[in-house]
Structures are given as C-alpha cells and as structure tokens.
Length: 540
Image (cartoon, rainbow, N blue to C red):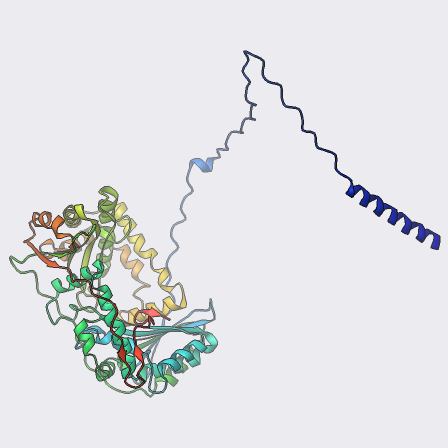
C-alpha cells in the first residue's frame, strides 16, 4: 500500500512537470486560411443567398381585435361617520393594504371669511411653525422622529392639516396634531420668517404670465372687496401688515369644533380611531362665527370693454382665458356641467384641444374648467397660444362654445365624456392619503357621504339635451370677458377687430429684485431670510 501511494505521488509530480514544460514553450503560429480566388474576367460574383424567412403567422386573432371586457364598475368604500358632543365630526374609512394611517383635520371656512388678503393662508402655514408647548424646531423634530409626512393648506372654502404615519405611531401623531390645532403660538419671530418668504414669493411671481393671467381674471370678474378678488397668498401691502394678533383672531374664528371634521383612513380599527379623536379633542369648546357665502358678482355692463390685455413686449406666447363667473359647487346642474365641460375642454380629446392644437397648431394644449367653490368661482377656457395666433384662437374658442350651445353632441362623444368622468373616481381612493383627502373635500364642500358612490348612476342619466341646456344657461358669450397676457404690439389690433367691446391695455409690472432684505430677529439679533421651507399646500 505504501509503494502504491508513492507511485501515485510520483505520477502526479511527473504530470505536473510535463504540463509546466508545455506551458513554457512558444506556441506554434496560427496560419490563416488561403483567400478565395479572384473571379474570372467577364463573370459576376453573386452574393450568397440567405435562407428565405418563413412566412409570418397570421392567426385569426390578428385580423379581429379582441372584444373589450368593459370598465370595472366603480364601488366606493364604506364611509363611517361619528360626532363628538362638542360638534366635531369624524369620517373614517378602513384601508388594510399598508400599515399606515392618514389623517386630515379640516374646517369648512376659508379665505372667503378673511378681513385682509393672505391672512388665512398665512395662519395655516404658521400653525406648523410652533405651538405654545413646542417650538418650531421641536415640532419638526417630533414629527420627524415618528416618520410623519405632514403639511397645511388653505383655499377660499377651507383650511386643513394633513398628516400620515405608520400605524403604531398614530397615538403620537394625534397628540402632536391636537397641540397644533388647539395651541398655535403665532410666534413673532416665526411670523417675520413667514413674511419674508411670502414677500419673496410675491416678487418672484410678479412677472410670471400664468400668475398675471390669474390675477387679471379675478380683477375683471369680481369687484373690490369681493372674497374672490385677491390672491390667496395676499398682496405686498397686506402681507406687510399682518400681525400675530391678526393670525390668532382668524384662527379663533375658523377653528371651532362645530366647523371641524377629522378624516381618518388606514390600517386602524374604527373604535381605536374614535378613541384617539375623543382623547385629543373632547375638551375642545367654543362657538364660531356664522359663515359668509360670497355673492354673485355683477353682470357685464352695457358698453363695457370686454378684452383686457396685459402687455408683455416680446412675448412669444399669449396666455389666453375666455372667462366668466361660474356656479357654486352645490349647483343642482353639477353633473351635467361636468359632462359638458369634459366635451368642451376637460380632456385631451376635447373640442378645444382638437381644434386649437390638432387642427390649427396654435398651442400645445387648450383646456376649460369650472373652479367650483362655496360661491361662484371662475369658469375659464384657453391656453398658451402662439403670439400671431392669439386673436384667431379666441375666435375659435367662442366658436366651440357656440357649437355646444346650438348643436346636440353625438352619442359617441357623449358616451366617451361620461366614461372619462367615471374612470377618474377610483383614483380618489387609491391610497390612504388620497382617501382621507377625498373625505376632507366632501366635508369642506358640505356634500353627502354617498356623493361619489352615486355619481356614476347620475352621470349615466345625462343626455345630449342636458348638455345643450346647461351650455345655453351657463356659458353666455355676452357675459364672457377675454383676458390676454402677451405682446400688445402684435395682438392688440387683431383683438380689437373681434368686436368684443374694445380692448383695455395695461403694462405688466416691472420685474423687481426677488431678494428680500433680511430682517433682524429682535430676540436673537440673527438675520432672518428665506429658508425655502415648504409651507401652504406642500407636504413635508
């Protein structure tokens, strides 16, 4: 056995030596194959023939498109409702897909109740800038420690806080939100920071054509003193005048339990959700002031100039809006108006877009829409139009409006518009955050809890005659104004030729330096300037 093992070792060593020797030798040169002989004179060399491709398959399903299975019926989630003894309302939807809980706390009073422009949105933003127990930094740290996403918003109809956290952090989230709602500090130093941010934003927006257009629309539609006339962010003068006491008074007027709804959606039992609301807000007392509903603006006067042009010399595009005061959200013709607007300018295949974009190539996109609020918000139709096509585009917009007023829409177009509206509904409940936001919208607008559940049935009953009726009733060309932000030297003459009562021209405001002068913090002596920290309408 020992001899056999030794022989095996010798054999292995010998094989290794021979392998190493072979590796050290120079390899033999590689001889290429001889080239093909040249073709004989007078002959043509043919390219090699490729194998014929097999004929493509042509089964029957390629000739006949498959039948559509149809849209899945929309089924809205079940919404549970409860009220605390102090009047606070709770709306709840269970969502088990993810271990998160979304919360909205909203009041159905907004900027329509303010005494000065920008006061309500400033108040909403400042609510996230510290409480009487938590400084701005401490508030941010505590919300960050539980991984919360949060924000504040304000519009004409309401004010709200939004937040979302993991399921097991919901008790801590409610504790913090209750402090924000009940005990905002409105600290003077934080107000100076907020003031600087707002003044900077106002300066930055001063020459933006979209902002100029929106401001011109509200100025022409609503008289001085109307709740819808001034921008939500405020004016330079109104923002400079805001004091902490103003914010405190606005908060006391709006945030009352009988005005407030807490919406909850997510992975939490109903009983546990209600227990958190009761623990956080049961002791909240007080009576708020009666709400003021904005009134209808005056009609267009006889002989009034109906074209308003904001001059931006050298502009390559004109921002155009054909506009009038619309209707409140709770108008009984809401569903018919939505179908009508979808046909006019509420989808890519709308008449305005097919006309101005696809047919004439005046714009990248044209749209229309109603901004429905507690009162009559604006209706607008238009888009960003190539400067030379400004007047022709306005003419086409009026033509499409008149077509809806005078002609019945086709059955195919009507069905497409109605289906488009219904297909948008599932996205309102896609996530816990969107679900809580949808519930908040129902609360702010004072709508029934089955508003969305019954909408498909209501829309299915809208007829072509209904579309024509609401177009005739609410889209009155004689009450429409035309707002244009563009180069007056190019477009004024053609706009005047449209015979819409004359053109009023105003110069766009000169661009200012958007860098606000830093102010000194009286308490610390440190410069206070823009921080870029997101505020109203932005999550964190």
